[in-house]
Structures are given as C-alpha cells and as structure tokens.
Image (tube, rainbow, N blue to C red; front, side, top):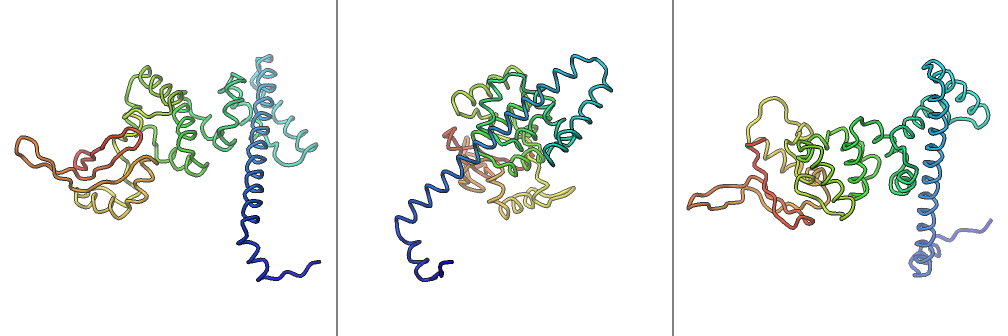
Length: 263
C-alpha cells in the first residue's frame, strides 16, 4: 500500500492536470447517474403498463389487489428489496397518468423518479404540467419540489385562478418558448406562515418579517426575481405613494411591485 504524503497530495491538487481529470470524472458520474435514473424510470413505466393491462383485462377489483400482492412477494423473493406492493402501485399509477410512451421517454431524462412520483399523484393534469415545467425550467431538486408542493405554490400562482384554456396556453408557451407569463411568476395571495406570523399582524410587522427573511423569500419567489427596493416612492397626479417591496423579474424584464396591505 503506497504511503500518502499529505504535502505532495495537496500540491498535486493545485495542478491543472488534477483539476481537468477531476472534472472529467465528475461529469462522467453525473452522466451515469442520469442514465441510471432514466433506465429505472422507464422500467417502472413498463412494469406499470403490464400491471395495468393485466388488471384491465380482469374486471374484478379484488383480482387486481391480489395480483399486485403476489407479484410483490415473488419479485422480492427473486430480486430482494425494492418491490413492495406500494412500489408496484407507484408503477401502476405512473402508467395510468402518463399513457404516452414518447412523453415518458422525454420526461425520464428531465426529472428524477422521485420528482415524477411526487407529481403524478395530482388529480389535476394542469397542476401536474405546471410542476413538471417548473422543475425543468428552474432545475428544482426533489427537496425543493417537495417544499413548493407543500407550500401550495400552484394554488398561489395567479395562473391557477384562470380558465383551463388560459392555463394550457401559458404552460404550452412556457414549455415551447422557455418564457414565463406574468401570471406564472406572480403569486397572489402569498402564504406567509414561514415568516412566523400568526393570526393578526400589522403591515409593519409583515414587512419587517419579510425583510428579516428576505433571502429565503426571494428564493421562494423564483430564481429570476431580484429585490430592488422597499418603500419605493412614486408620484401620481402630484400625490406620493409607496411601494412596500419592489422586485425585478429578469425573464419578464419588468419591475413587479408588492403591496403588503393588499395581502
């Protein structure tokens, strides 16, 4: 076993050759991880499709339950952990929600199985599409996606209040053009429980709490928001008004005011 010289090791790590090789290794590891996730996700979809076809061919609900149970036992015996009844039901749900193999093939390279699993249980297809596109554009991790879902991001986005036809149009625009509409980026109303405010609170308390947690607040809004100013004075017809918080959205290329007394 070679003797490790800490000084020599530290010196070689400063060598550009080490940096280049390290980059190659990390890139390869990332590609392997993506390929493994992609292959496993497609496997789960195919398994779900097989179970779905089998169950649909037999109209008895109890037949489906027993089939999944026996499959789980047999697969676990053959391959070990990872094939519980719950996992097989995830596969079935996956195939039931995403019926088009081409869509699944594209989706598996853009989202992890953990993300797909979280999204596919929404009953509203527009809600599912919203989180899929946001994951892709904002490059959310599984943890961030879970946080956004738990904070009811879709329900708080202005687009969710629009007719289905409008939602479909904006999501299609986001998918094809990689651009946000104002309704997709502006949240109304905001849920501010994370600021520690409960029951009744004044506008000043609200503003102070937001400023204290400003970094987290901007992250929650989205990657393209930048904080510009607070209590920004504007004059309209010789009267002064104050914008509580003023943000700038890089993709929209416009300023977005936030009036806290309207929340």
